[in-house]
Amino acid sequence: MTNFTEIREALAHYRWFNDTVDIALVYYIFYRLLLLIKGTRAFQMLIGIGLIVLVLIASQAFEFYTLDWLIHSFWSQIVLAVVILFQPEIRRTLARVGERHLFRSLSTVEGSKFIEETVKAAVSMANKRIGALIVLERDTDLTTIVEMGTDLDAKVTKEILISIFLPYSPIHDGAAIIRNGRIVAAGCFLPLTLSSNLSKALGTRHRAAVGLTEEADAIVVVVSEETGEISVVRNGAIEHNADAPALRKTLSDIFMQRKNRKP
Image 1 (cartoon, rainbow, N blue to C red):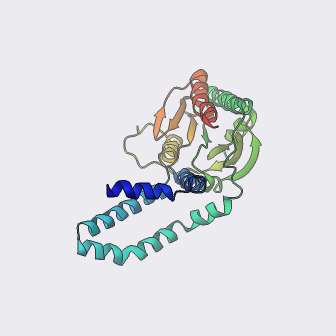
Image 2: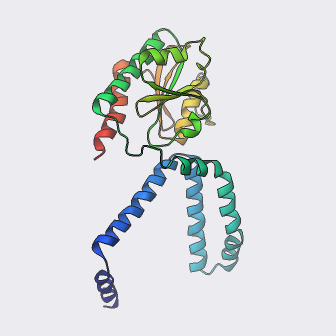
Image 3: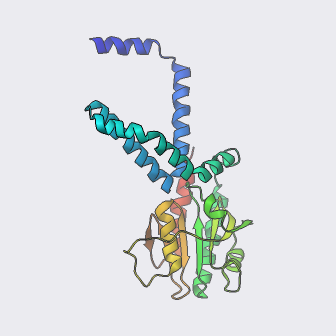
């Protein structure tokens, strides 16, 4: 009966408009922050901090005094270490909050055009045995990767993508990054995977593609200069032997359906 009375009193003091909007704003802010670090090492660090908090609560609930004292003693140092470790990412995120187009979405025409140009470029390079590494950014911000390459702001076309990866191009060894239907950088170096499950026959491009997609939700199109094979890499897994229809369907299912889900 007491619980029912407390609930009724809480509802009586609940401001339906103000409090609902307040809760919705807090939820949205946390949701956007999680999207910014989703799939990155920062997200793994956040999970680690969450586990420490749970252990702290458990130590207090079960009166584990030594464990409670230990966590409290090192808590300030843990927070300080996190701030120091991720200081560049924190500064970069704060600097870009105002300029990042969070609500940017491609129209159906723009989306289908950049996908078609990417497919044409990949098939053409595969036929000519030109190695390529094309990264298509999704929700995880790849600014750290972009800043290591050569800045571009070019429309996605078959000709530009091929010119980037021609053997005599000074930026052909790195990756091209596509964001919101535009090539924002090229010659970018990706983190290599440390997984021992990959075939030793796979080269640096495939290992770099897997390494990036283990940390971010990006899609990577890889063209092998040795075999002319086109592969699609996502979530740390490689999909081999993607021909033009298969590649077009994969990219359309990811980027066009993603757009259609947005209000």
